[in-house]
Image (tube, rainbow, N blue to C red):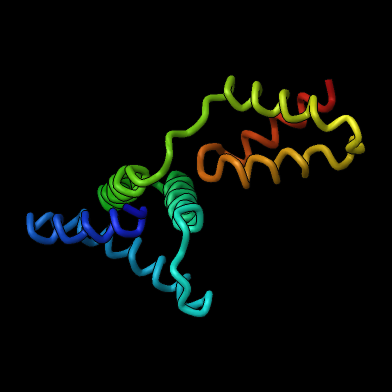
Length: 154
């Protein structure tokens, strides 16, 4: 079953169970997927493309939460933060397990060991490209960049 099919199936289940919040969140995901499909001439998205959409949605919600933290707290702000966090939990159910920092270090170091002909200024890009194609959605890109920068500068 594709990731998109799983999301649609869970949407139907949430609708039948009258779980309004989950249904609404899954509906947002479905809308983003449909929007992307229309932008790509109606082609069905791969799981990797759906993961990119989901990752973007989580990132957007985390940025919203961060912006709320700069505002003076009140009941409405706390409620909004809580709603964003609940949406993140639902979206993350469809994302692959995130790599630990140790796993990223090991994989990046192993890959860099194979890149003896790559100039130093191109190594970061090579690692980022490798991770994007091989481990889509399984790592935090900003964390990977920091780790690779440390490895390269060492």
